[in-house]
Amino acid sequence: MEIECIWKPREVELIRLNNKGRWFFSRRDGEGAVGLDFFSQKLFSENTHFCFPPPSSLVLAKRHFERYEVSAVMVVPIWPSSTFFSTFFPDGKHAAQFVTKMRRLQPIFICGPLVKSNGMRGRKCYITAVLEVDFRRGVFRRENQEEEFCVHGGCNVCLL
Image (cartoon, rainbow, N blue to C red; front, side, top):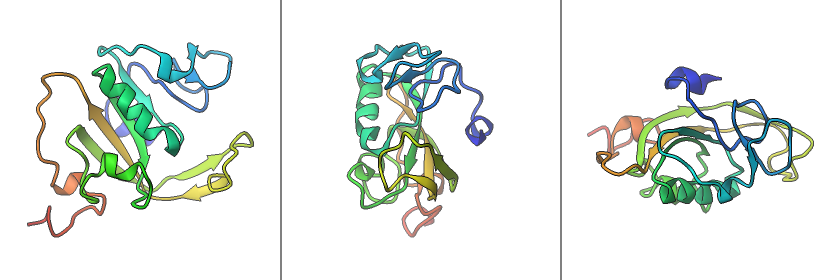
C-alpha cells in the first residue's frame, strides 16, 4: 500500500474495514480482530494508529484520537461539501494544525458486497488525503498554510 511508502511502516494498525492489518478492530466479530467497537477502546500513545473509517465516522475517530492524546494516520476524502470537511480543513483549503503530514492521492476504492451505501458501492475514484494527525502533548503546532498542506496542491495563500 502506498501509505507505507509515504511514511515508515506503522507498528500498529487499527480501525480497518478488512482484516489485513496485524491488529485491528472490527464492527463485526471476525477472525483476527483484537476487539469490537473501536470507539470503546482505550488507545495508547506509544502506538501509531491507522484509521480508514466510513466518512460518517471520521469526526468521531478524530475525537477518539484527541481524547487519548495519540498520533494516527487517517484516510480522509477531499469532499468540500461534506459535514466532516471543515474539521480537517478549517479554511476550506489547508489542513488543520493537528495535521503534521499530508499527502494527496487519487486511489480507486473497491467496496465489497457488505457496503450498504449506494454512493460507495462498486469502484470509485476521488481525491483523498492521507493525514498524519498528532494529539500528543508537547507536539509543536505550526501554521499549515503551506503548499504541502493544501487540498489544491498550492493556492494563492500558500504560494505567496
